Length: 470
Image (tube, rainbow, N blue to C red; front, side, top):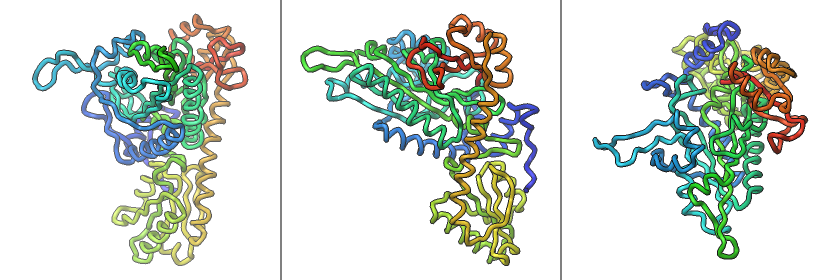
C-alpha cells in the first residue's frame, strides 16, 4: 500500500487531524474574511453529489425549487419576536449601500422564514393554494465567533424548505416526512452515517418553532453533530405575516407551516464519521469519483488499457476518473487518491498488462489484490456496495458501543467525555438539562423508549441522549 502523508493521528489531536485532512485532501481553505471558507473543487464535488441526492428526494416529496433574495428588510425579522431574539447575536446588517446610508437597514439572510412568509401571504388565498411546498438552495450568513471549516462558518451553503398547509396535522406529517423519508434516508443510505432521529427539547428548539425534529450523528471522537433539522412552525409566522387562506365561506384561517434544512455541515460530518489516519473515506454511493484507474508507467499500451478500463466501467454506471498523469510519480498520485478517500483504485502497469490483470486497492475495506481485467466491470459495482454497507455498519457499531445508560447528571457528564449518555427524560427534565449545559453537555434529542421519534416532549418513557456537540 502506498505510504500515506503524515496527518496528526486522531487519537493524538482530533481537531488538528480534521484540519490537516481538509488541507491535504484539498477540500477547502479559509476565506479572506474570518469565518468564511473557499470550497475547493474536490470538496465542492462532495457537496454537489449531496445536492443531487437530496434534491431528488425533496422533489419526490412534492416540493419545488425557488429562490428568494439574500437581503431582508430588518423590519421583517422583528415581526416574529422569538425568531429575531434567537438570531439577533448572529446577524450581519447592512447599513450603507451605493455610498449612502440606507433608509432601512437590511439583514443578510440567516434563514428565510420571514421573507418567504412575506410572499406566502401574497400567494396563498384559498384552500386550493395549499399545500404550498417550496425549497431553495442558497447561502446564508450567521456571524460565527468560533469558526471551524464546514462545521461552523459565517457563510455556508444549504437548502431550506418552507411549506404552508391547511391543518396542523398536515404540516406535522410533512415535517415528519422530510425528517425520515428525505433526510433520514439520505444520511443513512447515502452518507452511510447511522444517525439518530429524535425530537429537540424546548431549550434546543429552533427559534419560532413549536417542534423541532433532528438527526444526530456520532463522530469518531464520540461527540455529536446535528446533521439536519425539520421544524413545525405552527401558526407563529402565519400570524406575524397574516398568511391566511379562505375556507368554503368567507371565513379565513391562518396556515400551518414547516421549515427544514441541511447544509455544508454534512461535509464536516462525512469527514469526522468516516475519515481515518490515512485520510478521507468517501461512501461509494456519494462519491463523485467511485473508482480511479491509474497508469503506473507512461507506455502507450498501459495508457490505452487504463483508458479502455475507464470506458468499460463508465458504461457499467460507475463514476470513474482515469489518472494517466505519468509525469507525476505513481506513489504520489496513489497517496493523493487515498487521502481523498476514493473507494477503489485500479492500478495498471506493464507487468499487469502482460498478465491480463490489474491491482485493485480498496480504501474502505483495505488491502490490495490482483484481479482479472476482463472481470472488472462485473465485480466493481458489487464491491462498491459491500464498502457502502461496511461504513454504515461501522457507524452503527461505534454509536452503540459508545452510548451508555446513565441515571445521574454526574454519570451523564462522565459518559459525554467519550460518547453519549442515555437517561430518562422524566428524571432529567429541563432543570437537569440546564445543569448539564453549565458543564458543556447538551440534550441532543429525545427518543421514545423503543428508539422512535416521540410525539410529545412529555411522552411517557422518553429518553434523552446527552453529549458534547460540535
